[in-house]
Image (cartoon, rainbow, N blue to C red; front, side, top):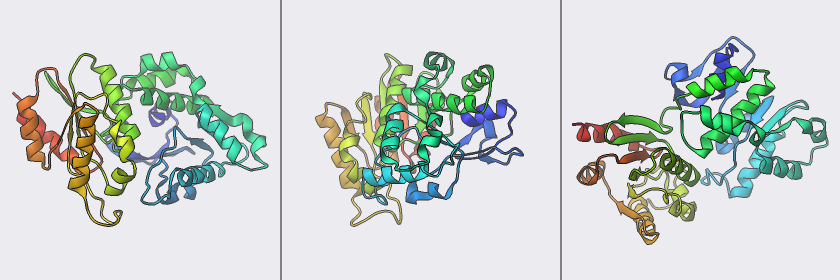
Length: 321
């Protein structure tokens, strides 16, 4: 979103982000000629500590990458170290809770010198942004508010910001609508419980009164094990859930491979929560199952960070009249 705003404002940024954007002609990077660099910083293995930004946006902190980090405290410690890298006149854009938390935990005598540069994006024009956005979900409203806050610090006028936000079509595999006829098929990269919950809530809001399917391929055995409790409550907005075999990540797994048993266990726990859930071990089986059960006006979200996106074109081919 911020890239879209900077491009429309004529600021010619250099960009390195984690997903392909239509605004970048289907690429995830561009080389600009200005002083501006927009980078999506990755916390895995503390990679983001190699950067020295002037503005940091922290939207949230989650217990994630637990094959590397010990626990949530360890993740938070890394984010704290990242925020401390800001210079005296640096700007932190975050929510009120995290702003308070960072101020409490960072023992830095220089902090007070730029304390007034902690910007809570929640104070932005929420209703105007909600009206302007074409993509659904509370998480996207928050993302847009954060982008707005940064844009205002760069003296970009509201007219340009809202024009860019209203034209933003989303990123590759982020609630990407791949088929929209009598049945809607959406491809999504979500693989963390919070992402799944936010995406399904957004879909429920956008497609009110329609039956919502989620075909989910868990990503990484370690993540699924350690966040298993959180995964159980992530699918509550869906009407039908299909769990595929876990996509194991080479070099990031520990102990015995248990993709099938763990996926079956997740489907079983979802049934206990009164969800219509099933485990299916092959893409062919999933397509066969869903094509027998789908009805007109159904919405299907194909979700996960592994190979599940390969199922999407096969499913579209099968259901096309």
